[in-house]
Image (cartoon, rainbow, N blue to C red; front, side, top):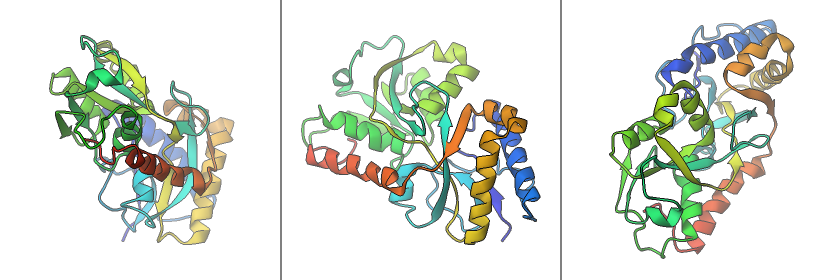
Length: 270
């Protein structure tokens, strides 16, 4: 199997060039380190939250909650990006509860009985973090939302809100920053009413099948890419200020949010 590379998490069509530039910079560093037969290009249409992580995955970025649940044991974390966008502090991110600009909602409680647009049932920013936030006000097992519609991605959820197909969505703050940058007219029709708890940022990963020595080359190349002035433009295109190590315990903490929501009587986003 040929190795693959992808950057599916922040991949608006307008961002293809920026993602390609980042991979080209990393690929050059990997070549300098002696790796051969590297993918020329990123996979263009890999879904953000797949059912499984491919054994041929050399480099990608995968949501932290699936890495601790449905995809546990399938990937090795290589480093966590530090993004220069609102909602991030160091190697962290959170989600924003977003509603249409003309929505009467002013707080989370105002969303009760509405239609929630969900990117994926196993998403951290779309499901796990908002579940923890809503657990504070949801009444036990009683459904909080009238309906939950799965959209397949954060951009699709935002588009659905614009079309009037739902009342709210929980959007990863990095996605939201890129969406506002590239689609300011659409963003002007949206409003943030609340934030979720904080979470470690979405890590760069390689398959668990990748030999340890290659994983270490990848890790070292990412550190060089994060700090070498030659690659400032590649970093800037994705708003990355650094790439750092985050302990496994921080990602396991995402399961604490799951347990806390259950203890508060809201084990599922409903």
